[in-house]
Image (cartoon, rainbow over all chains, first blue to last red; front, side, top):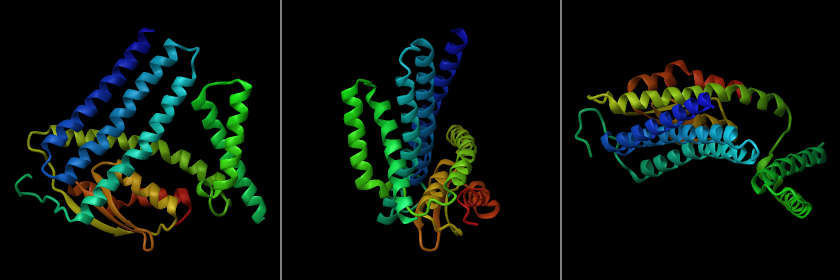
Length: 109
Length: 167
């Protein structure tokens, strides 16, 4: 049980770290497109790791309800499909609207 | 043959939806199971062509290759996050964004989707636009190195083309 707790804590910690990095990136990066780089990627792995941690914890803590980990596994799958698609959709909308990409040396917007 | 493909599509859709029903409902009494299966059958007959489309030839081999491709993709996602974390937390923020264009040999809907989503998930690049007719991609790269990985190495294009046999 101790090993499970360590693994789950590590997964949750890593997930929180990547989500936090995504938020910091959202604040630090200079323009729309680069900000999407931070949020689009970090939310995928961060959310996935947190759900994976919850899945493992539930699997060992309540082995009689195996349906919950299965549902969580589907959540991870859908996040991994939906997140890049949504990022791409936002990016495409911005590009078609004519948002100028930031280049090196310009002022941040 | 045409009828066989249709039956295969309906059966596959039905099986996938039945599995979903059982997993998501979590109730195993007769009434819920039967009503679920009836609904699955109706939906499968009406709209199976949304999920299973075209020739069923070599579908098994493609699924197998996709199953091998996915772990590599997951590893790329981890690398991408470490890359973004490094760029975000570095005091000087080593970014130099640019937009690149390139063409691929891919034409199939699903292979283009896979490549576009893979590009978005791998280090430093996000797909902006895809033009299916010429297999052309517009990609926003956060720095020079990730752009070169797509333009020069072309590892990912070759891998996706290998999975969907569109070389």
